[in-house]
Image 1 (cartoon, rainbow, N blue to C red):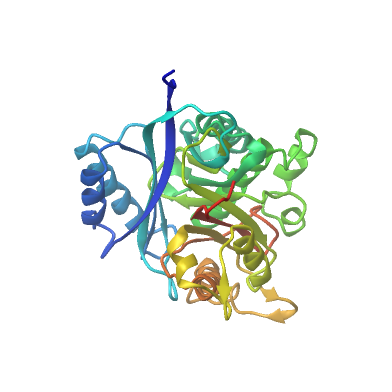
Image 2: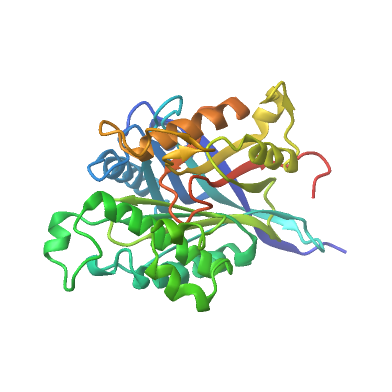
Length: 373
C-alpha cells in the first residue's frame, strides 16, 4: 500500500557574507538557486555603531527588502538588522528559511529546528519602555510560537527588533514618554521586549509583572526578572517590533537543531562549552574541530556591559569615547570566536533583562550528528 505523504516544513539556515551594508549579491544568488525556500527571517550584523544614529541598519533592511521583493519572497519575512561588529566580528547576514518537502508520513518524528515570526502593532512613543510594550511583545511571541508549532517553554532563542525614541517622536508623543534620551530609550525598549518574552515563556509570572515593569532596567530589577532566551535589539528604522523565535519542535523535517545556554558574565566560557557538548560539537585544544565547525550554521548571543567583571573594574561603562555596548560586543565576540573558530557570529549588545546582569543568552544552530534525535 502506498504511503500517504505529508507536506512538512524543513527549516534551514545559511550564512552569507556582505562587503558593505548595501551588499545583497550573495542573498540574491541564494534566493535564485533556492526557489523552494521561504525566508522567514533575515537576521544581519552591520558595521555600524549600533547606537541611535546607526543608519546602516535601516539601509541594510531596505536593500534586503528590495532583494526579497524582487525574488517574490518578501511576504511574512522578518528583516532584523543589528549594528556593531567590533573586534573580530564579521558583518554578515543569516537567512532562516522553510523549505517545503513532501515526505512519507512517519510516526513520532524527532524534534528538530522550527521557525516562527510575528510582529507587534506600531507602538506609541509613550508606550516604549512601559507595560504596553511588554504586553504587545508577549502577544507577538505567543503568535510566533504558534507559527513555529513550538511550545513557548521550548523556545531556544527569541529575537526581537524593537523601536527607540528620537527627539521628533518624543515631541509628537500623545502622552509623556519614559525618557527623552534616545540612547536610554534603547535600553528601556530592549528591557521591555525581554520582559515580554519572559512573560510568554513562563519565566515571568503575571503576579510579578507590575514589579518587573516598575524596576525596568534598574540594577535591582535586572537580577530579579529576566529571560534566558530573549535577545532584543533596538533601532530607529521601525515603529513596531519584529519577533522571531526558534526552537526544536516535533514534526519538523529539518536536519538542524538548536541548543542554548546562558553566560553569567563575559568570561563564562564553561557555559558555552557545555552547550557545544550538548550539541555533540567537539572541542580540540579549546576550539571546535574543523568537522564540528562545518556543522555550525549560526551562533547567536547577547552581550551586556558591566562596570566590573568578577570583582575587577572595567571601563565599559565609563568610557566616553565608545558606548558600553560596543565594548561588550567585542569582548563576548572574541570569546565566542575563540571557542568556535568562527567570526561571522551574531552578537548583539545590551542585554537588559536578557539573562543575568553582565551576562546573556547564547544559542547555536547546528546540523544534527548521525543517530541524534
